[in-house]
Length: 293
Image (cartoon, rainbow, N blue to C red; front, top):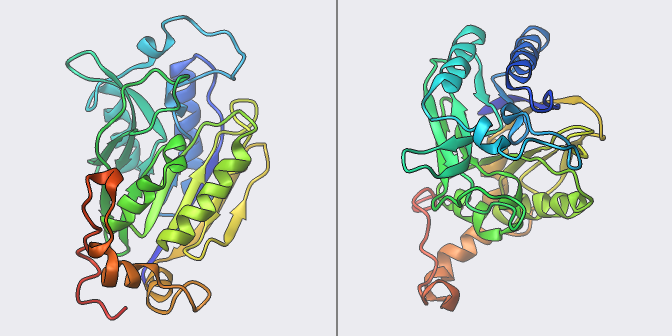
C-alpha cells in the first residue's frame, strides 16, 4: 500500500509581521508533529510566510517588495532547518521570490526532511489584474519516496484546466494547491478542485487561508472527485491519509468503475487536432505506456 499522511493547516499569518508569522508557522508545524506523529507532510496556505493582511486591511505600498526573498536564502534556510528538526516534508504555502533580474514570482516550495529544496514552482497563472507577480512558465512535480509523485499548483492555477492536466501528464497522483482566497468565488474554486481531481484522476489538496485572511473551506478531494474533507471558515487542521493505490485503481477500472479518460487519451489523443496548442495531438504520458489500464 502506497500512502501519504498529510496535515493541511487552514491558518492565518500575523498581518504584515514577517517574524511573528514565522514563529506562528514554526510553532504550528511543531504542534502538528507532536499531535499527529504519523503525518509525513504539512502544507499551509498561499503566501502565509509573506504575512499578507486581510483583503481590505491597509498595507504598506511596497509590502510585496519588503516580503520578497531569494530562493535559496535566509528564509528557506529556516524552513529547511525546521524540516530537519521535525522530520517532516513541508510545503510552506508560497513566498514572494525575488530573482537576480529583479522580477518577483509567487513561488511554492517543497522541502524534504533532509533539509533540501525538493521542488520550486513559480505560479503560472497569477490572479490578474490584482496580483502583480510575474507569471512562471513551467509546471513542477517531485517524487515523494515510497508513495508517489506530487504536483504543485497555487490558487488561481486551478481555474485553468491545463494546469492539473499537465501535472497529471507529468505523473502527479496528488496535486497540492496552497490558496489565498478572501472572496466569494471560493465556491467556483471548489467546483474546479473537484473537476480537476475527477477529470485527471488525482487527489487535490486545496488549502485556503482561514478567516479573516481568507474564507477557508479547504478541501481534500479524491481521484473520483469526491470530497473527503472540507473545512469551515475558521482555523482548522485537516489530517488525512491518502492511498495512492486508489489512483491506480481508478485509472484502471474507471471513476465510479466506469470512466477511463487516460485510456481514451492514449488510444486516440495523438489523432485529435488541438489548434489552441499549434495543432499537435496529445502524446501518451510516459507513466501510462505499457500500463495495464
